[in-house]
Amino acid sequence: MPAKTATACTAPHHHVHDASDFVAVVERVSRERGLRLTPIRANVLKLIAEAGKPVKAYELPEWVRNGKGVGADAPPTVYRALDFLMANGFVHKLESVNAFVACHHPSSAAHSVPFLICNSCHSAVELEDREIVTQLEKRAKELGFQPQAQTLEVHGLCARCAG
Image 1 (spheres, helix red, strand yellow):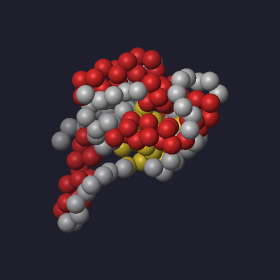
Image 2 (cartoon, rainbow, N blue to C red):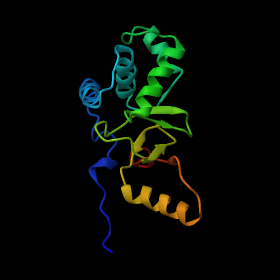
Image 3 (tube, rainbow, N blue to C red):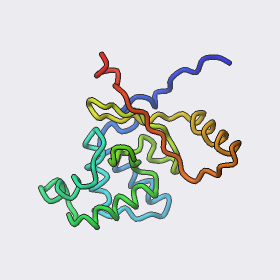
Image 4 (tube, one colour):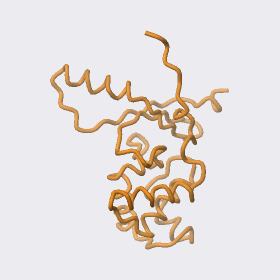
């Protein structure tokens, strides 16, 4: 079997170059799917995309309160926006650090992806590799386990911090 080459999707900012463009793509995808991307949801999404690193949920109401966009800053409102964005595959939750990142593939259907998380600079790379996901699902089923959700997070040092 030939060695697999890395895809461009391993680059941290492969698809999310500009937060405003990212939100525009999500608005288009939402319309196509018959979803309602409210101003509050769009603002939460933009704040996450602008951060450039994983964002803790408790940071978002504070950012809204400090004038970083429109919308209610009440935590339940922000958490409902996060629920919507996660359910529709626009953001991912990094369980090990309890933070959120914008999905590098907002026009894809919800998908499982492994993440590489830097312990030093806290960047998170969405490693789009269907083979890894497929192997985990296959192995689980071989053991009689019925997977319902999958979260794979690898912690270490990114190339910049390791260098």
